[in-house]
Each structure stands twice: as structure tokens, then as C-alpha cells.
Image 1 (cartoon, rainbow, N blue to C red):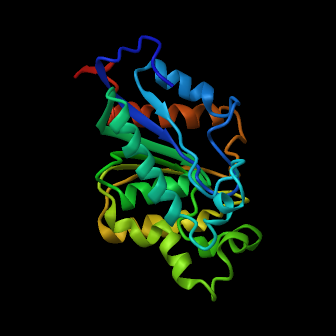
Image 2 (cartoon, rainbow, N blue to C red):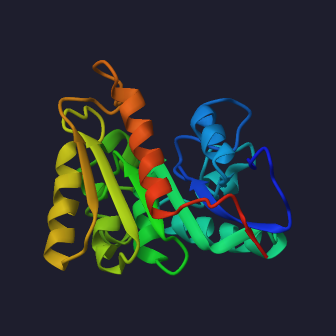
Length: 243
């Protein structure tokens, strides 16, 4: 998505919307988060999204199964590679001003990208992530990762908490304390790890909210306002700078 007043002679900051896990795609013909993204595009951001291998795109068995045992590793590698490839063919993208955000599995990938590729991503907004895959529910995690005792290295390599020392940019963590899907304890572990490492970050708790983060008057509006404000304060659009 591009600003309405898009000028190809200018350089624009980029916001990457990521999911990247086996449960869903982001590159689809539906609204989903698009109202939020279109509003940000009008503020001067270019919004991009990629489906890495392992997502449920209609691309065949090999595409789907390649992620088995390496959720989080393959996705973060391919998301970073896709962005670098896009930058080479789209001269209006400012590679020095890149932000990333996502929810749930996308929140996990946001953390992995911020921790593993700090030279690329300057701002990250992670909503309801899974920082440690050992804490997520078995019906999902074991389906794509195998048993923890049989794939201990895979679980460790895919969990962003184990790479938190790589954080360099601005990071916002958001979680509902009543999350019934991605349990709050995982984010608490990550918060403690970042404190231990002396890493600055921002943290927003929505008391009693579930994974949907919609309960209570004004919650959804507050969440998206928070994300927009964090992006605009830490990666200003400036309406596109001349090349």
C-alpha cells in the first residue's frame, strides 16, 4: 500500500505486517488489518507484507511442509530476505527506516526479526507473541515442531526469547493479561529477560483481555491508536524525503 500522494522520486519509510506461521496468510484479498494500514499509508508509510514458505498458500506440499521443526527460524530468515529483495527493485523504499508489527504468531516473528536482524528493522510492535514455544499449546506447537523432547534444538532455535540480546531498535510489547490462547506468562518471561539484559523497551498490558484484545469499551481503538502513535513517534513518515 502506498500513500495517496505517492511520489516515486521520494524515499518512504516501510511498515512490514508479518504473520509467517502455518496457521494463516497475510497476502490475501480481504480487509483484515487493511483499514489500519490504509490510515498509516495516508500518513506517509509504504505498507508491505510477505508470505514465507510454511504459510497455507496454495503452493503445494513442499511449500507447506518445509517449515516442520523450524517454526520461527525459516520464517524470520525468509521475511528478512524478502524485504531486502524488495528494496533492490523498489527505489522509493528507505531501507534505513523499516518497522515491523504482527499479532500472535506475527508477534513472535516481529520479535525474531527485531532480535535476529537488528540491522534491518528499527522499530517493532509485537502483540500477544509466543516468546518461548515450549509454553504454547500442544495441538498447534507439536503439530509443526514435533515433541519438545525430540526436537529440543528446534524449539530453542525458534523461540525469540533465546535471541533477545540482539535487540537494538525500539520495541513495543503488548499483551492481554487474560489471554486464553497465548498465555501471558510467556511475555512476562521475555520482559524479565530483557530487564536482565538491560535492554530498553516499552510494554502495554491490557488487564483481563483475551487473545482477541477487544473486550471492554474502547479497547480495540486504544490498541490501534497505541500502535500508530508508537510508529509515528519512533519512525516519523515526514511525507517522503527526496532521493
